[in-house]
Length: 240
Image (cartoon, rainbow, N blue to C red; front, side, top):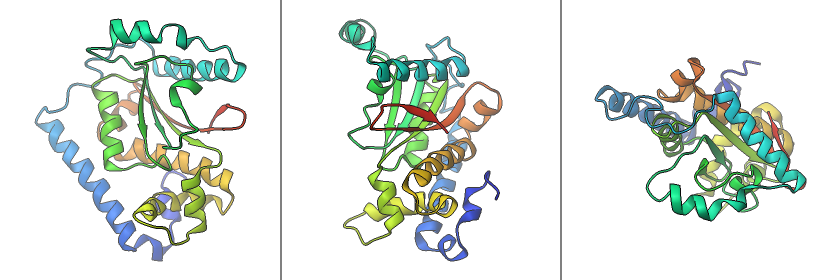
């Protein structure tokens, strides 16, 4: 199984559906637009305004150390939140990490990593899936704000993943999430936990490969893009 190209695991029928074609089209359009923008110097040099002095490995360790404090009930971030907000974040932000998380209200990103105001650049969408808007947001975090690590964070009991596995009729545009999650279902089968993990890994891989801003930063070891899963019951984040 070619894990570097998750789209290969989609059946021929699903790969040619309007939803699948639309997904390829908007990812391609987003990438082309960003390349054009970069060529006209609309984007700053990578990490031009970076405030963090951490390396990508140190940034990831800071996130995981914070999660250990959260699990152990020894959080330290609240002591400085208001002071930092007033003194340092009114005119600028200084995140060292970015997290793409599910929109689920049970996943409070800053809390589970014990980080204070201004330390994590957070993008959220049900199912923690990659879209052009999500790519653009995370590119801004990496290129302008200088984030050193991007974590794609799935979580236990994810309703979006569960709905995609079931594939039932749903109201409105909820089903628009399903094509994004389908490659993980094709790879991992109907098990919710396995699909959640696979989905986080696939979305992280797509982010590394689809973005003309993020991909070179990863190749130059200036940025890490990793996947993980948050256990709502225990509070523990496990890297995939």
